[in-house]
Length: 70
Image (cartoon, rainbow, N blue to C red):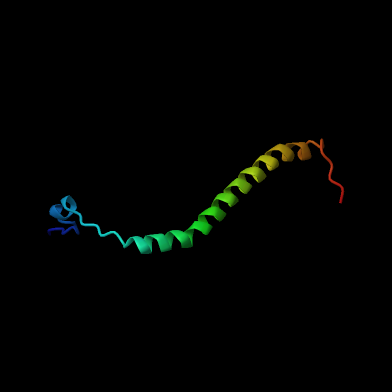
């Protein structure tokens, strides 16, 4: 029994052809995703701030060095 493997032809890997989209489409895409990247960056900064606060406050709460009044 002979096994056949699905393989790419070696000449296809040596001469890849890439077609770039028109600059207008790249600019349009960039404008669409720009606000999403800004929001992601803002969220990452907030996560870092909240993580730092949690790491500083949680041990104090657990050791009763800090009291919360409701």
